[in-house]
Image (cartoon, rainbow, N blue to C red; front, side, top):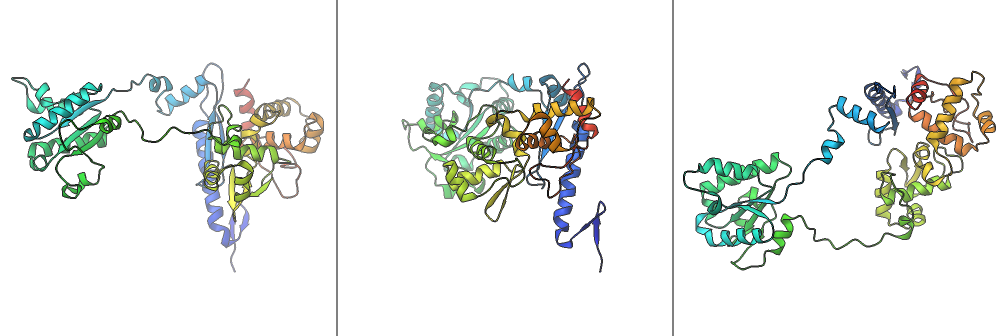
Length: 402
């Protein structure tokens, strides 16, 4: 007989993999907190607040909170592009490099003139090359600056070494520059006759001069063929809340749990995936996608949805008359300033006249930012834990919001 212990606790060998993953997740959360949570604004003294959720590597989520100035400071220290730099990035207008064989000059000219007439700038050798120009340098410049590399594939052009060199350059640019797209266009040649690398791409066909090229123009402008989207189901439409950061479908699911939880505890309430789809008025597929989006806040067990307590501080503020983060701050300030402040949740609930549902949400938030020790044990209901045990994170939480 042998026994396995982890952090002083006996572990069932059957649960070893789960316990190891949990330990890895906790270590990852702690490493992120140590890396990001130590960032402090030099003038205001505000710390970055790190909120974590999820118990597995698949559903672990970490979110940082703080003033806009502190978030920008964190981005700078971590080497992330600043938001204003993203906002100032200019969207390039369509600029097409047209590759073709001289034997296909008439068809290439029609393509170039058609695209130009639709507001699309075209690099075409007949227009760009002048006496004394370096052919290689001009072509290099045209390909490197294009947003779309368009090659006219014909039985003649695919045998031309120069065209194939341009295709190689076009592939390289599209693979290394996200703003460039490779577009093959067939004329008089079947897809099966194309080289594998070209045949693997969607290649439209042009048959003759004068042919309607509207689809090619739409593809270059990235105009979708999809029809206009219709209105959402009423239940989803009513669930849309500004700035939740989640889809309407995820909002509908979160709203259901927020409004139907009695105490704001784990698995409170429970519901099957099929029944959840019915009560939200969504399809089963949309419900499953919403649950996937909310991973870390919910989990599935035998086709039943078990809600995590961390969902309530995240979403209560949208559908309940209280703000969990504000409640958590009120509790944190009281704990730090009053040595006689009660640690028992029932006494705190009576002191503030908060029902367990509201108090549990605030406590869950303090758990998520590692401000108090997570002492949850079975038998605490209707409270999430029996007592509060402050950690150093509680002091930093109060200082960063002062």
